[in-house]
Length: 344
Image (cartoon, rainbow, N blue to C red; front, side):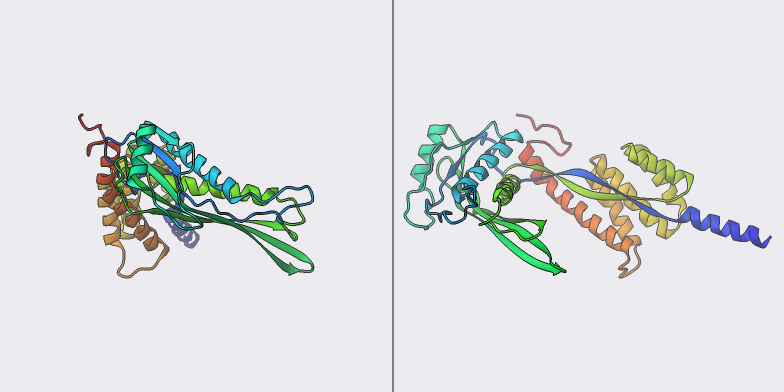
C-alpha cells in the first residue's frame, strides 16, 4: 500500500510538471516615418562630403587594400535602395546618379529647397532621402589567452544620418540616424598589414548592408522576428493543445486551453492565460491577446520575480506595444481597423 501511495504521488507530480516551448513569430512593426499616401516614388541621394583618408599603408603583400570609405558608402546606398525596393511599399525607389554635396571640407551642408525640388522633378520623386553623414571604421584587438594561444577580435562600426524631405523641399521629420557594430573572433594573431585583408573587407561590407537594412525599417513597415513561448505539461489535454500549437492550429489549441483555464488552480491558470494570449496574437487578434495577458498578470503573486512572472511581464509589454502601434501601422498600410483596404 505504501509503495502504491508513493507511485500515485510521483505520477501526479510528473503529470503536473510544466515545461516551456519556444517559437519565433514574425511581427509587423510600423515605420518611424509616416509618409502621406501620395508619396509613391522616392529618390536617395549621396550628400556626404568628399573628404576621406587614404589607405595607402593598409595593404598586404598582394597589394590588396582595406575597403575605402567611398566603397563602403556605395555599398550602403545601393543596399538601402535594394532593401526599400524589395519591400514593395513604394512604387519606385531610385538612387540618384551623382553626388549632391556642394560644401568644402568635412562640413555638413544640407540640400537647399531649390536643389531638392530640382532633383525630385528630374526623377519624378515625391520624397527625397539625403545621406548627409556616413562613417565606418574597422579595428583589430589581439588578446593572449594562455599558453601562447591568441584570439583576435575584428570589429566594424558604422554611423549614418539621413534627412527626409518632401518634393517641395520641406522636412518630413527630424534627421534619422543609425549606429551599429559587428564583431568576429578568429584564432591567432591578425594584422591587417601583413595578412590577407579580405576578412575585414567582408566585415565592412556586411556592416554596410546591415546598417542599410536597419535604416530601411525607419521608412517602411517591416516584419521582425519575435520570440514567443507557450506552456505545457504531461496531461493528455495539454499534450493535445501543444500538438495543435506546433501545427499552428491556434484556434483549436485556444479552445483546449480555455476549457482547462476554468478547471485549473491559480498557478496553472497563469500559464494557460499566457497561452491563450499567444493563440490570439497568432490569430491576429492583438486586442484579445492583451486581455488575456492582463489576466495572467493579475493572477501573479504580488512583487513576484520568478521566471514565470518575468516571462509574463515581458510578453505583456510586447503585446501592449503591438496594440498601441496598430493605428499607426494601419495608417501606413492604408488599411482599416479590420485589416482591409480603406476605400479610395
